[in-house]
Length: 357
Image (cartoon, rainbow, N blue to C red; front, side):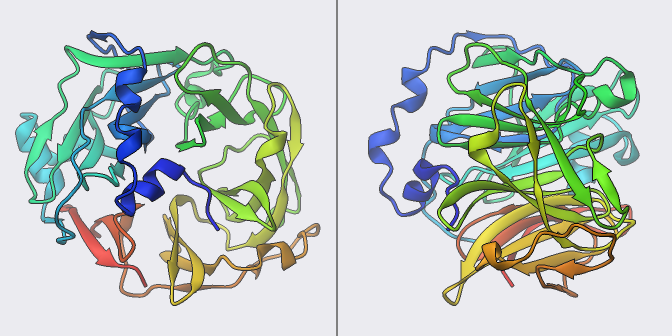
């Protein structure tokens, strides 16, 4: 079973009232947030929003004061959301880029990381979409926040943009996938929250079956925390598309960690987002991809799949492609019955909930 943020699981069961003082207990002074970029997002306990700033080499925790439980499980749909966002920001739809979306499981508000502009001078913006569809900007001029600077950010511009590819809050720590300046560029960092200081990440090595070689340079594109045979693990997906399990206990500062490849899901593809869910007494992983659609993978008995150690194409954990979900650009879990997708195959994008398959 998943071990993602126990407080969030309890909140979904209306049992997290005792944790609602978490944000107040964290010493987060109010002030201006100086984001240089806004990429990967993650929700923490009690309405804390984590923002990955790859250009600035930092993680920022924002107290968005979003702690009122949702009274309705109503579906969400905002058609043409990229056009609506562009109009809000006074620009054209082709001049914004939606970098990530994440659902606050308490309120069901959706947070959206946006770049206004597509060049080096792009302006980062954080937006909120309420269950009724109303869009608003999260003001960064005076908000309670805390940040931590990464110690091993790559210096080359291209690699620097992938300092942070994915974030998750797990059991009191922020887990960060991306690139570093170490020998193994691929890195998984683990930073306790509230923040104090960041140590170096763990360098990650995997066997890439499609390429027929060990890989230490490519970053994890997306991951989910998951418990496999009683061991807390990371299920990580890479470009071209190996699925790898990595023990959380080995993610120590400066360590070199070898992941275990348990699936090859097809080359010429970049995984975008993954979620874990249960249905009919079974556990599944839903993964959105750049060119291979949305995959539904079995998540039971993952310990039974033998490590892939030779050059191969598709093999390992079985999956099916969800034909009804085409053009998914971002994905998050909305509630126990539905997922949130940013979807569209043309110029116009929609943000909406869909039933979990």
